[in-house]
Image (cartoon, rainbow, N blue to C red; front, side, top):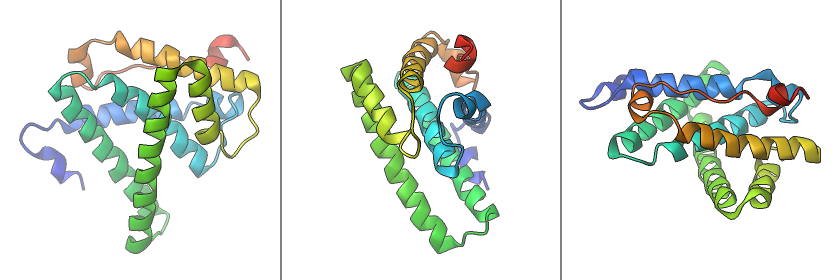
Length: 181
């Protein structure tokens, strides 16, 4: 299934490791139990997109990082495709859903980038509109997630470029766990 990742110059192990790390972080129960993210397919997908945004933003540096970011993106959508197949969705349904997810991804990435550039209130509004669209989030939960995004962006900026290219990445603890909420 991942044969397209074995072309010359591609590093499927790094791409897969980075994708696995961002999904593992997005699956931390604290985001759902304490953070107000809906524990639904949509909520989990949106939280993966938040983490993908943060990782891809970090990987805007060199051409090697950009290429690896594209590979991670490809792995992410191949995984989404595989998950839908396992749920019994047919080819036509998968194509429609992947197209919609891709559009959602692009829209959210733009909204989060604009939010980060404009400041805390703007990012909070983008998170409220997208990540928390299906839930009633408290102001404290929204503030914690907004602070988490900024803290994670700072954390990722400090990671070694070569380690990142090897597929080594870490994320800070969810803010609810760290704050004891």
